[in-house]
Image 1 (cartoon, rainbow, N blue to C red):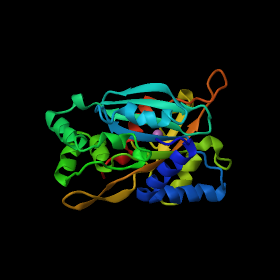
Image 2: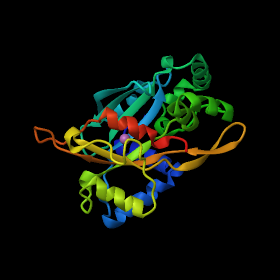
Image 3: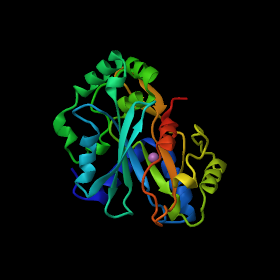
Length: 267
Ligand code: NI
């Protein structure tokens, strides 16, 4: 596990860009207006509630570099459980980790996932690079398609393994964009596709968090039997508001996150 928080995020960012070329273009687009002024609000990671690689196994990598658990979330319809973690330095990105509740799915899906998990070497889970190490198992197209029928999340996680599902531009730290609407309009004008599930903007000032996101890039993945282009990762945008105490809200809004998950839907 990494000892240095910035080094960890630098590696996660590099790994994310490898399959998310759109993120770099957007980074450059916003950065061109405001060089060095892009702060990452949070990253998100996905896993299964399997004893080898559950949420807590991923969280350990962040706790090691100064993160603390700060909130938990339930997504009943998608059968997901999540926690978010914050660093003592508020400028470090928050970390949102979710896990799929395998027992809520068919025995077919459970068997498929267990077959994949059996291939993981538990020693790898403790290694420095685990959070950005990708897939630890062989996967064929038939299994991917079967998973996709029951859970887009299961299929995505089986195909991509361990890597950031998204990074997030903090609109609070942008000077030329004060609203999420302005960010969205700039992105659309430049030709980027936004996730419109639940509307382009998820959340309101009243719930203290507004979010939007691009649709995931399409990227070729090597399966055992062939190469297939599937959704990879996306870029998110977040504007946080102050609570009654005058403090910037640092949590997540389940109704919004529920729709953000759909940024990786197949299309
Ligand atoms: Ni997010």
